[in-house]
Amino acid sequence: MPKEKIISNAPDVQGLRVLVLSRAMEAAGSTPIQAGFLTSISGLKGGSRESQKLSPINDRDYEELNAVGKKTSATVNMSLLYKFAKDGKTQDFEGVNYLEKAFEENEEVFIIVEVNDERKTTLKIKMKITGFEVTSEANNKFSANITAEKIGEAKDITPFRFEDGENIEHTSDALVVGNVYSDKKSKIVYHYPKASTLKTPQINDERFIYIFDSVRGVCPHAKKQVFDKSKEFIDSEQEQENKWEKENDENIIHETENEPTQGQSYEELKGKTIYFYPNPLTLAYPANKDIRKKYTCDESSGVASSATEEEFNNNNFAQKGRKR
Image (tube, rainbow, N blue to C red):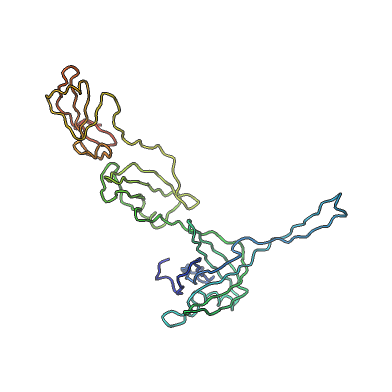
């Protein structure tokens, strides 16, 4: 939630963030507001069942029997740390005060708990508050001790959160495989064909993951993912494009430093084919429009032929000017 949307001014403490949503706010489609940070909570999930033990006539012929009855949801107990005043003024019915209002008027209320785990799990709990007490702490901070009974179980409403990080980029701009993007060296780029996916992913929306090299920034082949019902992007089954690999033969030499000279004899290169790469990076990180020169040395004399230029496109080298 953007900071400007947070009305209650909660102190920075370790713990779980709690948002409040009244029934009226939910009906109006309003954004939940921050109440504060939990210092403790119990009863988020689970409960108990009634149990009755039936005693046997004796402990030799019969085992003890247990009759288990209806389920009772666990009572929620939480302590919420917050600031009662903002800019020197108390906030009427904002944040924690919504919980107090719900208690005083015996209304149902929702709390939304954001758990600080890897998934950023978000739970929504509908409840009625049975106990509300505010205790004062130092530095204009207060702790609200709340007891409540859940209405139904906590619902997992965790929204999809886009990956973030220094080397991660999300874009709807198309990328061309084989082109050089020097500004994307070492980056993981997520491309979304539909710009709307960047805002709110929908079922069956696609994205493509490009993992760029750290040396040249050549756009690689992408891995496809699809947004599914679990509200996550999952890998899609697809035929993977093989990365170009240099020819590997005892009679082929790949050279980045010493270019053969046409008509000159090379005793040690008799019968060899030499590929010379004017840009040394082409050999390890070939990009579209890169050039290499092909020479052959005569098997008897070792005389180097004239060069045939080959251009890299569509993940392969082909003689320049020829259709692929």
